[in-house]
Length: 475
Ligand code: FAD
Ligand code: MLT
Ligand code: ZN
Image (cartoon, rainbow, N blue to C red; front, side):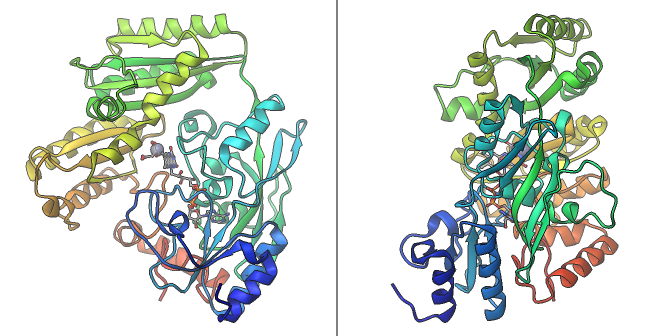
């Protein structure tokens, strides 16, 4: 174990020698989830408390060493792994994994930032409450990472992004000071809202060490349906009906193209996907949560589907009869990213457009892509209820991989993001910017907005030590 570097010696004295890793296989921390980039860290440091985080940050700041905060390392945009220089410290929060307090009357839970999302959901359910944030990565992503990226997921249509679920933060600043903002207040207009500045800042403005999150009552019943729809226009029409008939009971509305579903069948033969090999181009997963009863939920849900069939926006549908069946239907949707990863070379997009304009956007963009890359395969799925599509493009079978990955205005990204601009959409709805989309941000965000963002970064982190090169490049 080398002790040559005085910073490493100091970090060992702060968090204990076994919690500073600088040799052996560090790929769990150095390689991003999509295996796009492998970095090299000076060390991986694993503090167990906010005080330890503050001391680590102070020591790194004094040594001029930059820090990459990391939670579960499930991010999609290469934001949580170090660069290749071997000079950055990865600050892994996963040892900070305790529930600090649950206040039932205030409907809040206060947790360490390294808590795995699923463990928070479970703790809340055991106490009789719902914590609604839900992503397919929930078994390994952390609440600190969810806040760092302002993650979305499958319940946003009812409960909003992580931002809307957060009532307070504890943050270690780039100077190593601790800001205790864990108030749990629902109203607090005392100046700039620093919490909202930190949320979605991708570790570039400080380290989130704790959070107070909103709770909801557990629903009395939850029903899931899987419906085949004749077009994307029909899916949007169904969404409108679902809002109208279920109101706040509509807790999930996901769309999946048939090609995306065929990848699930291909790579996970054990998963049974309804309505395969049919002419229906899209399927939808809908969820209805009800505060009254199972019977009430079923009556409302079945009525919605009847009306939708009468209007022609649903061709066929199955409603889960049990929790196990409901989980199986959700599992189909959640398996798409993994199936796509297994299929090989692909370009991912995480775009948002006004819901009403999505069918027109997809028609036009599909046509442009097919003209430029005949045979390109469109893996289109996502959170239609939020206007957020994962409009992903898989290379044509046996096609020219180099041409497909070319990243200029005539390439896949150029075509898709050009159309996103025309539709006044966003190039990153929920995954963030990281290093993968940093150069794209400059092309697609207003220069005025970028100047304000850089001014904030310079004011809070003048030495550019917090996750440098991520989201913004600072000269
Ligand atoms: P990491 O990947 O470790 O970090 C992500 C970013 O947050 C980095 O920039 C990092 O520096 C920063 N960060 C991490 N912890 C902290 C902290 N404590 N303080 C400050 N900054 C911090 N995302 C969605 O939005 N919606 C989805 O539906 C969704 N589904 C997914 C499904 C799968 C199968 C996978 C693999 C990923 C999915 N993701 C989704 C992406 C990912 O899970 C989310 O971005 C998640 O919020 C990342 O959490 P994490 O703990 O893994 O963070
Ligand atoms: C999803 O919605 O499944 C996630 O955002 C992950 C992904 O798009 O790969
Ligand atoms: Zn998503």
